[in-house]
Image (tube, rainbow, N blue to C red; front, side, top):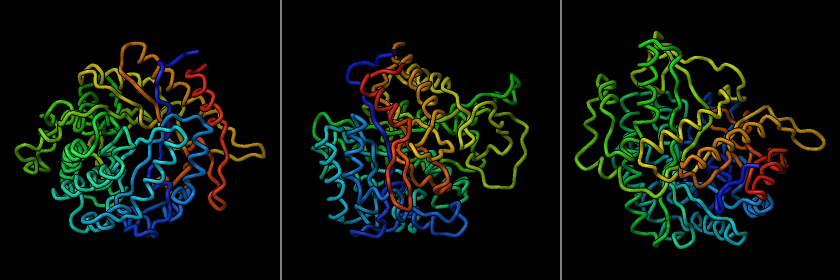
Length: 453
């Protein structure tokens, strides 16, 4: 048995558009994901988040389920267009009322609310005005953050500004795989900066609105990338992906500036004039905690050729991605708990020992419902191995304070629609019936023991 420190946070996570449904009720406006999902050919099977896991209407029963699991925390995101339908101006009171009710329900069950302000559902009206390509969107985000904090700041102890800005910028604006579906690599770099600027301005807004003791964080998905060989070409390919996938975000957040090599590598695409005086200082506003989302490792080599398809990696058309070898998830992602080990040690050593939580970790598998439930031994193995790494890192002095499994519920998996299941709780979408998978029973036992066998 590996026993975790007293007070270690055991949680599960979701995101608003992936679980809530009820996309047109109580004054909610349209988000870029509503528009994207309703565009033919963008999402597998033509799926949308219109109903999803119906969490908006069923949240009280879902919180009771969390209490049965024994969760000490629930990480959820607020839908920006539910609070500000057009992304600016007065708040939509019924939208904020919903999140107030959710927070109160969690507290009533002894579960800590962990609130994420932005998990990719930008109000469509802001996208129509330029989206994250426009600097003003960062200012609008800060106003939105202040509005939510003004209502819920007395009850939510941990606030996250953004979730995975890499995905929002590069999948949304470079490859077009995610909403809003744009394919402009220079625009994607500008969007990445404005997302980080939104974080910095959001931190300022939260610090002004929150009571003392509330903590502020951001969740990132650093890319663990390995060279395929010891050749200079492979090493350079890994450096460039590491630059765009990890250091482009961690360096300005925690080191007060963008990496010089990334600026150099992308000079043919942009002159970086969108970074103005004072921006990097704003982005580097001190945070209390860094959220780490980890799923897999990646292996790359040089010598690739442009595929002709839009890429989420500006300036990296000659990088070859090596297919996963060995065990992989239903997403085709390599299963490698050792990648998480290296990542948290690297962040700890290179970025000043900042406190961390694993804010997403989990896996999709081809789950099958049987008469007596869902037998998902592969997911249990995945979670067990990654939790063992978390425990090892804590024992080695890494300041890791909690773990959130992704995800609590099966849900809308972005461009994959409902074809991929990450939840530890099975959702039968036609009936919305919840059924605990074996991994949910296993996770409950881990929480009860505060440790893993």
